[in-house]
Length: 285
Image (tube, helix red, strand yellow):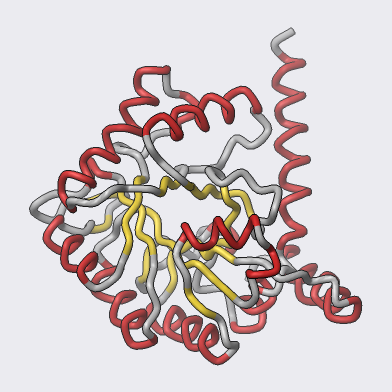
């Protein structure tokens, strides 16, 4: 088992401090899932794994219920961020990539507990039949419509799931607008939420400004990214932080994340990104 500095620091340094000082302020947590399946990710460090075994996912949802969390949507989460006193024990459950195992393995569990969720679709991989993405079967539009009828929300995860930071202006707009239009045409309702694919380039202020403008002009009202942590009063509503979850999140770590004890990781990750940016800039001088 690889050494997990993030887990050790969270459970044995940050979490005890928060418990003693009561420094953990109410905040909405946004969970980030991808594939709900038994997948062999032995060659991937636990932090970077994206699969959650069905029985682990069921256990995590049970933990949410037993801990007294209310599951809400992204629109309400955005309001809670601007009004922290209303946050309480609230959580948003999100899924990226549109994999069909959400329909077969995650939705039955969510339905059992009366929980809702938001699934972000890369629309080029969602068809009338089951297309594939990253080697896994994706939802069909018929299944998406069925899930929508049962309270599941859908947002955009672009059209082709590219590295948006590397796209030119026209391609960026097509990815953002095209995916939204497709989902709206297929479901007959407005799409308000966007999920940024891949690692979020939070150190590039100019790109963030351009992307925010494109999202606003396209008619989005909120969005999420892959930056680790929980959103707060100063969070950009288009780039809300999330907590990554996978099969390696046992009950102790899962609940510690929800309590805010994992938020510390955002700062060192940001510093690493800044260092890489500086090194890259220096090498091109």
